[in-house]
Amino acid sequence: MPYLPSSSVSGSSVPPLSRPQLAEARRVRAVELFEEGGSNVEIARAVGVCAESVRRWRRVWEGGGASALRRRSATGRPPKLDDGQVNEVRAALERGAQAHGFEADLWTLERVGLVVERVTGVWLSRASVWRLLTGRLGWSLQRPERRAVERDESEIARWIAHEWPRIKKGR
Image 1 (cartoon, helix red, strand yellow):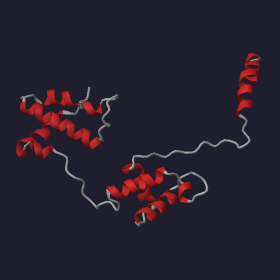
Image 2: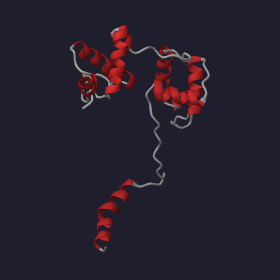
Image 3: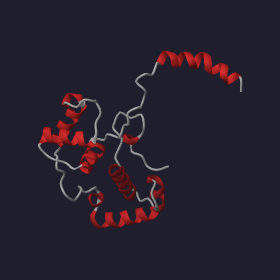
Image 4: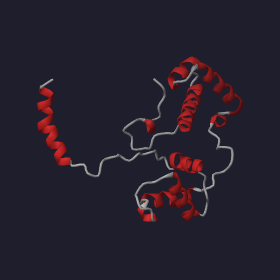
């Protein structure tokens, strides 16, 4: 069974670890086992990785210590929105689309982009809006249910209770 730090166990009140955090937790556990004198195969089995990964980690650890196996900050272009702006956008979006003057209370990438620009003054492409929603905010795509306006729930319940059993018997 792979190594799971206590904060990634389901039922815990601590949020689950991201993949990079989990990978770092495995390397930290491997360092503890290196210091206890464990073999590469034993350590690999204990943390849930292949022995080659443990050999590579051991070489890095021997060359630079435990800090050499720590996660490094992401490289690349810095995000257009800082954490404070992302929190402002989150609060604005949670008020709903109608609070921002849209007729229907549904969000599209274009609408979210307009709200982001109103709140922060920063224009984002549709792709960047998607990354903001799914990556930084942790939201997912939610499609609205399509139901007829004329739908009569009481008539549907009556049909299921009375008509469906009668039809089903005739099979």
